[in-house]
Every structure is written in structure tokens, then in C-alpha cells.
Length: 334
Ligand code: UT7
Image (cartoon, rainbow, N blue to C red):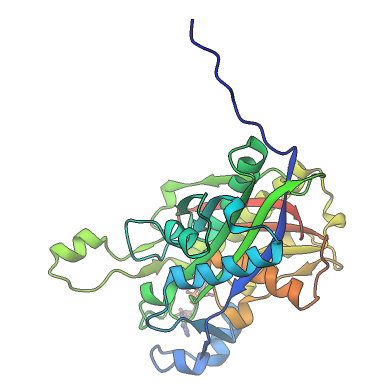
């Protein structure tokens, strides 16, 4: 007979304790983008809702930006760095296969007792991280978890590609998740459809790049219309399933924070869900662009800081992107 083993058990519930963000300094206007692609400020605003976006400096890294956002969230949480049990970094733009961005971020913020790993779920990555952090805290594997969404998409964008150069941008957002007396993170509805892996992908692998003699550095390439149609038809259903799983009526929501992919996708999803007029909608894309895994925590942090939404309000989060991946949950805001 096998020996009995002790299993961990954690807090009954988990919650988001704080947010943090980092927005790089450099503003990139649509006029600047139009120096490199055949487009206009008007077209970009109308088709994507983007007015300007931020680019990191050439020497500014995913680790730099992620550490800044995480440090701010940590400071606001009042949790000491040594109490963090896990650092989850959602990113697809850290330029090393190994080590992870999370390991270096954990070191930089003083999370000396934390495990660390990166989540490669593209624009759904932050919501994947919130779901995982909730389970880690409740399962007893970590008392506190930092979830970071960070991207430097400018490094992996073909600045001459008309289909994507105006969309992608850089930034970082983070939250600290820890124990709660009351339910504050609903079940995560998530999934992945690898049959659609080519909808958003890279032009070639790094191995192909090397074997081709270093020509045409790999960049992101997206079948924009296909992704647009998929998001508008599938994401309202995913978000509704997250509401149902949490037992929350749409009328009880205070804010809807979808991945900031395109303002028209946000509008179409909100309309398909019949989102009541009193529910605030994140529209951070206008001045931030599409920052993939960073977009949901950046939007959350901005809305809280600007007083557009209330601390303690009920928010519906949903991320979706390359994979194709998606994840959604209802959370109580810190
Ligand atoms: O974050 C990860 C997930 N990503 C997304 O969710 C992005 C989803 N897709 C999109 O947001 C949109 O597909 C885009 C914003 C990327 C493109 O908008 P669209 O409305 O789907 O444009 P389109 O590709 O259907 O092109 C419409 C027209 C075409 O001209 P014709 O054939 O109608 O004459 C294009 O040639 O717009 C033209 N066009 C442009 N015109 C000016 C395409 N790109 C540009 C451009 N500037 N940059």
C-alpha cells in the first residue's frame, strides 16, 4: 500500500488586490505610421479606433516593462515581495527561448520565494494568468501571485505591413492576486482552437530564418478579416458563459474589459451581448493600440486610476487571440 501524502489546500476564495501598469514614453501617431504604409489617419481611426500608440525605446525590454508594472502593483498591494509564491508573465514577445521573462522579473522585484513561468497564450494570456492564479491561491500552491501581461510588439511587427503595422504596440500591466474572504474571481472559461493556428502567426520560424541565411526576420502576420469575424461571432458566447458560470447577470456588471484588439470588435461584441447602457466599456485602444497580453490589465489600471470605474465594481474580462485562444472570467475590481 502506498504511504499517505499530505496535500496542499489554500484560501477559500481569491481576489485581485491591486493593479499596476507601465506605458512606454514614446507616442507614435497615425501620421508616423503612414510614413511607412499606404494609409491615412482617418482610415486607421475608423477601422481600428486607434489614434496613437506607445512604442518602447530600442533598448527597453519586455523584462524592463514587466518589472515596472509588477513593482507598481506589488507596492499598491502592500504585500511584501518575499510573500509572492508565483510570478506568471503572459507574453509572446520576450526575445529569448529561455530563460523565461518571469524568472528575471521575479528576481528584479525581489520575489525571492516565487516560482516563475511565462504564459504563451497571446492576447488571451492575461486572462489565462488570472484563472491560473485563482487556482494556485485556492489550491494552496501560492499565497500571493503576480500576473503580468507585457508585450513589445514593435520588435515583431513588419512596419511596412499594411494589415498590421498600425495595430500593434508596447506596454505592460500587472495585478497581485491573493486570498479573499468572499468570492471575487469567477470560473475561467477558456479554450484553444489550433485548427486556426495560421490566423495569427509568424512569417517563419527562427530556425527557418537561420536556414534561409538570415533573410526576412520573422514578424507577426494576421488574417485580419478572419480573426475579426471569429472574434465577433465567438467572443460574445465565451463572455456569456463566463457570466453564467459566475452566476452574474449582465445587468449586474459595472464594466466590460475585453482585449483591446480593435474598437469595432469591442463595439460588435458589446452589441451582440446586449450590454446594458450603464456598463462602462474599456476603450483604452484609442491611445494605447493593441498590446496583446497587456491590453486588459492596462485598460483596467487606467480606468481605475482615472476614476472611470469604481474599486469593488464587478468586471467581465475576456481575452482572445493567436492560437486561436480565448479566456474570460468575472472579477471584483480591487
Ligand atoms: O489582437 C489579436 C487579435 N487581432 C485582432 O483581433 C485583429 C482583427 N482584425 C482587425 O482588427 C481588422 O481586420 C483590421 C483592422 C486588421 C483591418 O480592418 P478591416 O476592416 O478588416 O480591413 P480589410 O482588411 O477588410 O480591408 C478593407 C479595405 C481593403 O480595400 P478594398 O479591397 O475594400 O478596396 C484594403 O485594401 O481597406 C484596405 N486596407 C487599408 N487601407 C488603408 C487594408 N489595410 C489598409 C490600411 N490603410 N492600413
